[in-house]
Length: 596
Image (cartoon, rainbow, N blue to C red; front, top):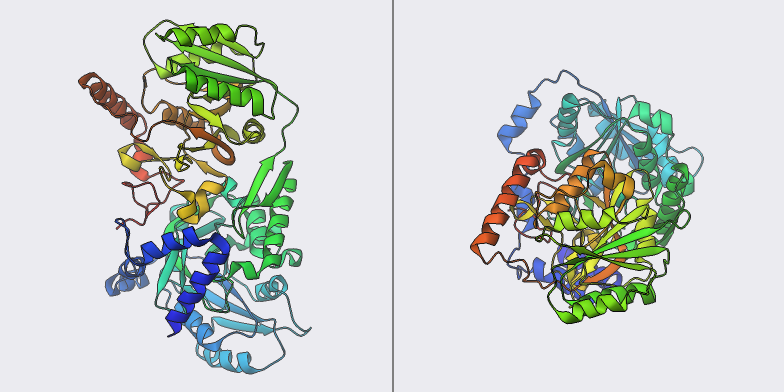
């Protein structure tokens, strides 16, 4: 009955937070009605340590064997859950740890009496109680820190669980490369402690995603020297004290490592915020303030507002000045699409300092040229004529060479703005020194996702995240609605500074049709610049869902040649996996499903 009850609570809370369609989509997956369904609970159990792996890990000696101090604040804790937490720590295959409990609740002896049994048997377990009345979560955790003598600090909640190899995986990683911050993947576990669900398979460090959602959360590990440098948890951010702390640590850390493995289980029960996030409105307000404080420390002027759901935020960077934006639009006939695209910009764009460069590419229809003639008197628009055969890269490079703007916006002729401020939103991100390219959220005509970032490796080379999916029916971690860093975005709507464009030599003409934008983005990434997907920049992309079929021998040969070129040029990322994806997710679908 316990699981039935908690599942009912979960459905009710999901409806309140995300709506009926999202809930129905999740129920469809839960009831095995989807073709790509993976029973995650069975998957998790099958991926846990075997007895032989456990023995092997327990017997391994590391050259570097740091001590981990696990900080756990207590407050009227459930003894059954607390027992399970302790046993999950004692089951660690790496033994150099200490468990530091701080009781910030009422002055009662029940928890001390309960823990004393463990402390008598295991000297690695420590306890301190508040002498000054009830403590907030930050102060309580800070009190636990006074007991810490380890090299690294680990944060845990009093009702959660660690996988047996959680610390082992951290030590293994540290012996490969010393870093100051580590985080892992996580999921949720029900009251029984044996049923796992809602996995969060995370990308490698993703600053723009972190600014929209505390995707790091658990398990978070920080070197004690770093903690001493940045300071302890700040009570001013209680409810989002970990969010603020993660920001401060990652701002200063010498190295951040993500371990793509579920090593932490967040307990979800009727009284927990894991099941009813809307119950902690104060925490989400504190989260917003944590983001604002982080941005202020970074010297970034931005507006932070609530996002698509509690715990999610939207960050819009304020544009400095009003620089000229050059919009480059290749075109061959399809004059109705082109007119719709340009009219929308001319009539509805809130950003007005732009020029439009149309690159005419061998059109044959008279109405196309008649439309060009109608644009002659428009001071914003210039038509250039490309005389050679079609080459998407060359055409865009040709157009850019004739622009005057400090920022370039590559735009397809079959797009139409939805957000009147889409240029402003993209420009705000593009002006950041750490950003090289900015992409937009594109929709098919039927309202499903056409583009929300590009994952390298999907489909063999690269593919659009969440392609053809309905946002209202549920999207993994609401990822289409939050800004985040990707390895690439589509050039159907792509902004870049002229300086960065010139630094990489523009698009590579060897990619005549396919993969030119992905190659372009990866070249910019090699400069150390970020490629950012900005969801509040929304447009329609009227590209047919069936478009792009290589239905002639010549096209197939060209596509195969460009695919081989991409594979030879970007061997490393194809072999090791896209850092902004996760090795536990599928490469043959676009929905971030768990890999079987």
